[in-house]
Length: 144
Image (cartoon, rainbow, N blue to C red; front, side, top):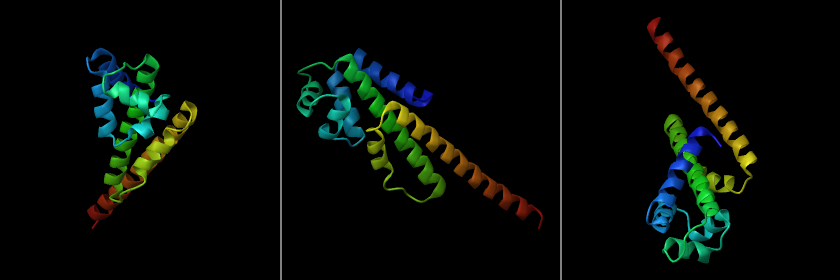
């Protein structure tokens, strides 16, 4: 897990564990990312009904559920940020970007790390390419 994803996961897990309303934090974070209980529950290793009870405060999440929740939401957060940066840099929206986050969450941690590393590599290469184009334009404009 990258340092950025780990940082968000630790912060979010802390909010769930330390806060009085663990269910409220889980529900509001899930809704913020646009996930349904049906989508999130299997990724947390629980049934949808169990997630509903956690969110309503009728039961408390286990530490394993909190850990998986924090990882899923941290990855979703970083994929969303990377997609937004990519769209801003290219001015070409990627409507499938958020769906890609959902698909990525079905992968093993090792597969997710490999994909994340490749995505970062591609992002950096694209950024460098864009910057080279800007530098070339600037150099071409100054020689006139």
